[in-house]
Length: 527
Image 1 (tube, rainbow, N blue to C red):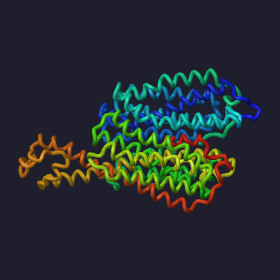
Image 2 (cartoon, rainbow, N blue to C red):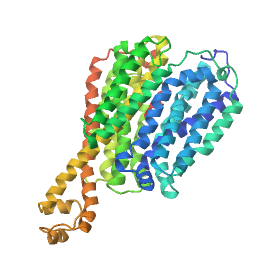
Image 3 (cartoon, rainbow, N blue to C red):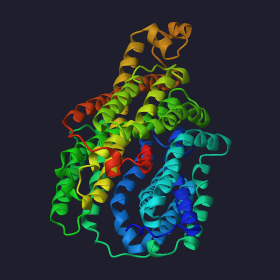
Image 4 (cartoon, rainbow, N blue to C red):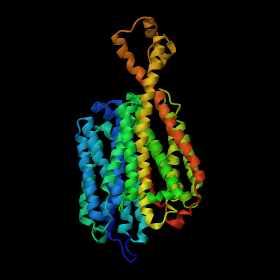
């Protein structure tokens, strides 16, 4: 409920809001700083390379489940206790992640952390309208937007520096003090009607359970498919469970008097297309954030700080082009800007498909610049397209669905990317091994075997020591075309998204409908 126009925001509201933005900043930053240090975490905990993706996927999936709950929890707990509870849980989960001694323990705490983070971010942007009168909302959204854009900008370098200077445990420990400050501060300062409980609609727990079970089954099924085969009973059972959960979720949502999500929004063509674009953007956005440290850590063998330095380029480009995107979004046709953004993003993804084992910062800079420049154009105009034609009562539900679809695209995208990498790597590894057995000197030199040593060994059976020496070289070489195939998947899917823009009905200008304000900058993180 908005504050009335006579209300004046005082120091309590502004202090509370800044502290809430601090909590949101830490939640967004957490995704970025962990991404650059994934190879270090994998080595430290002995995580198999094909399981590394779960560190991010678990967080994203929990966020997807949390997003539809935010409105209900705000009504039941009030803005103050919702935020305090969420940031306290996020802080506790961060401590749990830091103390984790194994893969499964870390994933369990990442699920808790993702659930709390998924509640924090929409709560902050809802606070803009709950705490401030209309004349103060522009400044509040700007503060929140700057915090949300800064987190992914500084995240890579901060994460790399922390891991290299201290240890990966400090990626999570850094959340503890800011989390406690935000929780205590909001408890003390946030008062008034905006912090009180409200009467809200009930929550459909069976639908929520179906959503969580279905997503988990899909991701495990996609992960198991390369090793077990798509026709394996386990894979078919998991995919069948996913399909059953989706069907039951849709049915339950349509007949429920308190639906978890408002599917009536999809009756609007622009909203449906906007959600599809949001899904594809999440696929490419989270996919690229995963693929870069994966390549730099496992192929180039860079440390976390160097990975962060290289990945900083995307954030800087995004930060520099954000004002231009906001200016253009308020004045030009959303269809034109959306098409421009997705074409640019697709080019940035496709330029990464020709990486070699020697590719490094110089070759990665331009694709990163292009992707960073495109991100805001892929975010703001589709938001206007999706929400600009919805009836007023459906805008809040539509906004939640729109953001949920982006995280869903990221979660499913990471699973498909990992499936692509490890199925293709197995094929490439067999091909390289076959050439080595056939005595191909060029292949041996390409993967790092000294020419003279290979010629001396050629024609003789390899002993166990030689096999163990060669295996890592073959595996690393096989990863390069496999990662390129994953980049190609992201690029082609993003390029195909451009055709959807042709079916969009013209949306009114952003200034006329109040959409596209700086608060949408939060979506730059996939949050």
